[in-house]
Length: 315
Image (cartoon, rainbow, N blue to C red; front, side):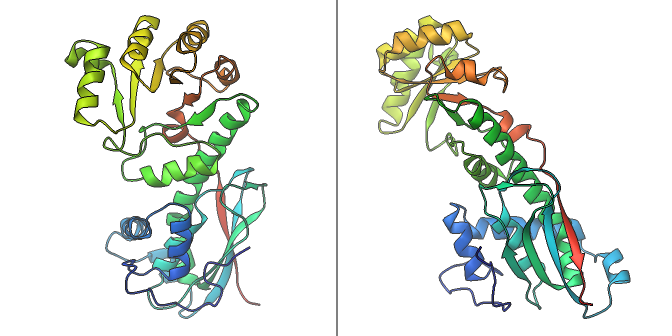
């Protein structure tokens, strides 16, 4: 397992990195995860600032002797899928501007974890470890919860052609991290923003007058952009296919109507099931032959996976 800061010293950030406060190893891990180190550092710093609210950690300042150093394990309290270890490491690192914190991974993002298993060991000033504890755990618990729920959906459709896909129903400011957690769970990402793909929904159809008119207008505005059309009926699916849609979203279709839509499309467009999907019914939906199941619950309703910090002091 690779350590985030195995040397225990604060490595200099490369001049071209532009990642205030982060060492190159953590920044590199975040990049490898498809995350922007600058954005993660800013989020972690804002979260720490929110916890301190311009003051100090009163309890820690009163109970921890000056200069005391120790080591702690971040431990899973229940089984699940890990996501967010480099994000948690960034929090611990940024919380210690004057003395280094060593962070060593004991698990890997995307991997399974058992209850009682350590996933990260941190060592440094005890005051820093305790002050950063809840901020780091909040992010880790949330992201691992998303990854764990995603894995359940992925497992439910194993053996079919369908993939589990997220939506833009994300927590404001946390989209990149939450969609990363979906990837850790084995899901795939839908568009990250309104500008990187087009999705014609019912209100766009109402504004344009028809599915075909909306499709033509978007194609004229952004000819090379990925374009998905939301359809409420099989008639609209036929209209979208005639217009040349590459991807069609089947909104609140019954399993029988999804099956009919798959036959109607006959491979001419990818099909995505959305609306009212449940984990217990996921396999039946996947077996209709759709290509994606869009699941907003992955990011807006995933329960946290519980982790705790267990402190050890030198004897």
